[in-house]
Every structure is written in C-alpha cells, then in structure tokens.
Amino acid sequence: MTNRPTAMRVWRLVRPGELRLESVDTPEPADGEVLARVSVALTCGTDLKTADRGHARLKVPGPLGHEWAGRVEALGDGVLGFAAGDRIVGTPTAPCGDCAYCLRGAENLCLHLFEHMALGAYGEYVLLPRQVVNRNTFRIPDSVSDVRAAFLEPLACVVHGAGLLKLAGDRTLVFLGDGPMALLFVQLARVRGAGRIAVIGRHSRRLAVARQLGADVAVDANGTDPLEVVKELSDGLGADSVVECVGRPEAWEDAVALARRGGEVLFFGGCERGAAVSFDAERVHYDEISLKGGFHYTPDSVRRAWDLICNGTLTLDPLVTHEMPLAGLPEALELMRRREALKVAIAL
Ligand SMILES: [Zn+2]
Ligand SMILES: [Zn+2]
Image (cartoon, rainbow, N blue to C red; front, side, top):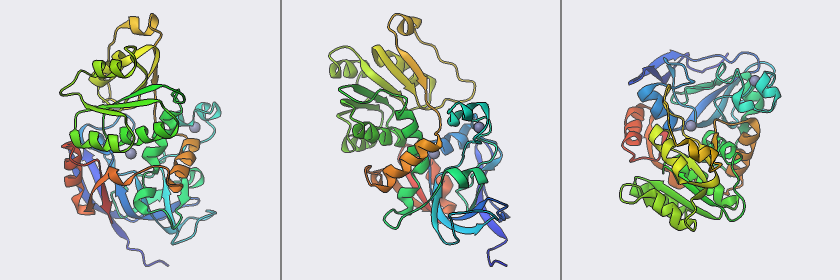
C-alpha cells in the first residue's frame, strides 16, 4: 500500500500551440521501472520549439518536460541500486543496446530511442523506463543541488557534440547563437582547450553571460558583420570550427560561410521538420569544409556530463534566470520565447 495520490498534475501538449495542465492517473512502476517525484524541472529550447511547432521525433499530443531532478517515489520489481527517497536525476531516453546502431556504437541514433521515454517533467511524477533506469539514471550527491543536477540532459548533448569537433590546440571556435546550449558549449570548449572562442548572438544580456563564461569575443549580429568578426579573430582565414546553436535554416547557411578552408561546421540546433538549406557547393569541395550533424547523446556522454556536474567544473547558475511554480509554465515558455529567460526552473 502506498499513500501516493492516485491522480497527478502534468502539462500536456495537446497540439502545437496548445498546452494544458491536466490531471492524469499517477503511474505505477512496472518491472525495472522507477517512479520519480519531480522536485525541479528546467525549461529547454526544445520544449519551446515543440510547444510552438511540434518536433521531428516527439509524439504530440503528449506530456512535456525532460530536464528534471527529484526523488525516488516507488520502484518496480528488480530495480537495483536505487531506494525510495533517493535523490535522482535521469535523461529522457536511453538506447536499446542491441539494434544495428547501438551495435555500431552510435547509440544516439538507436532505432528505439524514442519508444520508451521519461517525459512529463512539467508534472508531479515522471516514470522512468527500464532502459533509462539501467543506463542513464544517477543518485545525486549531497553536494549537488537539484537544479544543477537537472542540467544532465542538455550537458550530455553538449558533451556529445563537443566529441565530434577538433577542440584542442590553438583553434578558433565560433558559436552561432547565444542560448543556453551555446553557453554550456562555450564552457566545455574552454575546458577542452579551444584557443579563441567567439559567440555571435542577438541578445546583449546573453552575450554578456557568454563573456562571463569564457568567450573571448561575444558580438551582436544585429550591428556587426559576423564574417568580419571571425576574420579578425583568425588572421583573415575563418573559423577552424563553427557550431550552429540556433536551429534555423538561415543560421545553418550562415555557419557554412564562417568556416576557414579545411574547417568544420557542427549543426547542433535542429530545424523544423522538412526544413531545407542551401549553400555554395564550392565550400565543401574546393574548400574541404566538413559538415557534421550533432544529435542527442550516448550513455557515455551522459556519464561524462554527470562527472562535469558533480565535480563543479562548469558554472551553471547564470543559465537559470527565473523560477516559477508548475502552474507558471506558459509564462515561463513566454519568457523563453521573448528571449528574456535563459532557463526557467519550475519548482514543484
Ligand atoms: Zn533539453
Ligand atoms: Zn538501439
């Protein structure tokens, strides 16, 4: 017997543009599953994009919210390593471990990644499927706050993306975009030894945070030509690595223009389903620019991200600009939409 309420509140996306705080049955964890009581959820650009326009990989209608920390409320049979009351954090997905992509080590491309998800962090409880419990869930040490722990998923994506780039040495790295992902990435690039780091954005407050977190240059694209800035930083050559963190076709196209000959571009921001981009083919053939996509995370990048969170290497506080109760989610997303908030902590 439990004294857990039989109904819980959770924000569900009914269709793009329509969010509803609904009362649903509190789930019971089946074998291998964990039910977590959410203590904090962080807003994410992906949630905003999903709420406004749908998502290429997520089901709508469905619950929203995937960055969270909380406590173990109940355990299904056979769960090892966790006990009721433990403070925990987990990612929304985990790979199956035996599809063609998992067997090739590309677990971020797992064919079954989105079949069993821990979604609904904008709600009182989240059910963690067996794969997530087994591979991407951690007990939070006393020294780590819930809000800090809740950075696990976005940071895992950044760790994965950084692994696709050549970062060490005296290289010039340019970020297009000044949102939370870019600001996490800047810090990781700094830790990994990037030479010069520039952030090109459109929001003066975010650009100030970028400087605070380690960018050598942070410029407003509204008043400056990004190409000129990048050339000045790189003896006229262009960036060694460009990281696109906006998720719009125009930004993807701009990113290609900023790389030097032999440089690389990482497309880190996902565009709307069906989006098409175009760029000068000369840049890829004659200039030998490498174009790469960076998507999601693997259990290895999740573990590395968790180490970074626990060992205090990164400065995460400035990325959480507001706090609101569960009922305030629409307002939180509006602050994100207006680019007034970097991330909002939804406290439960
Ligand atoms: Zn996220
Ligand atoms: Zn798989």
